[in-house]
Image (cartoon, rainbow, N blue to C red; front, side):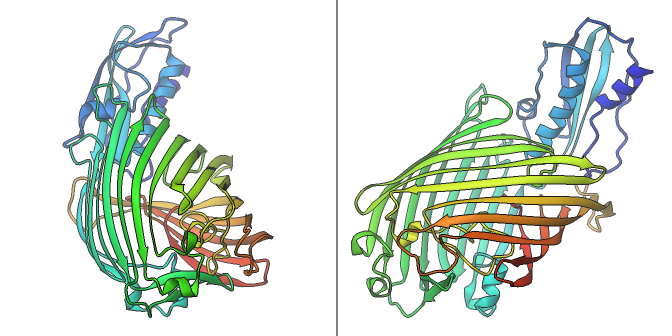
Length: 468
């Protein structure tokens, strides 16, 4: 009886985004004592584009391994988790296919996602929807054009991107990433190039908000080319080394508004940038983790002379626990240190940019050269369901939804040596609130927040992205 329960678990169940497919039958084995199982063949089904060896790269075992039953059970769950977190599949099933004594065959069944997205692009340029609202929801603050993205380009989980945008920002961008360029599937590379032109420039921060000017003649232009090396020795750890060269030219009139926008009162600067980043991922679902933890750290060198001279050390981590039925707690932390502390304005972006923000302060930015923050989040799963896809497709016959109620509290601090006129710098910041998360297919996470801050302000905020 015990063995049957264990073997039933060997069929790793699909995530909520999957449909109720009929799964392979579980063979009945005599309960082993101290004899290991021998992995025979690994069969892969459903992969029309993805190479089978890319799928097998995510498994904690391989054909020919000897493994005891408890480790085999754990390996099935790790395999399902790893494969789903590649972002290549809508559904993953890992199960025993057959056995011959203590030799077992394993079957991997997947449903591939859509990989090709030649779609029109329309997106506000402001850092979040609250800032766009403050700017009056103007269509002149929207980028539009063509966004061409080909995921899994050659079946090796490589990515090809080409953006041709106009509107607020005139931009051309090309990027190709190949994470597995060698036979051992440990080494990869990336190349990229981008050019952008903006007429309007965020030249300063006043009253904790971005100030813009569009009265300049030449605006701001930026060119960048980059090379990247990736190294993944095992399942969960990723190393990245990136080298880029950038040139930024701003209208000389800008220096009259902010002489410290660039270093040494220059209207143009060219600089190299070298960075190293390490990331460890061990979570149930990398785009919306509820259990497990992910950690990341990096060091960056920007520039080599007085015109651009900055070191940066950064780190962040997210740890999640299941504390009760359908209830999850997450603790997140992040820190950034830039040195020397005397930096131009363009190197002072901290809270309010990207994923470095406190919930409840979305209307503001906080500049600095050193900062840290902590987020606490308690979630409760309200609903979990699928709806039938009105479009006929084998890979997307149902659309999954998971809905969570959430309460949270954040705190942070940003140190600023040169630009101290804003009231949110050099002081502890506290925010809190409650909200709702909606998780659906293609890693789309909708966040609705009602939050408040220590200044007594409150409001409703909407985000279409993950916390980190």
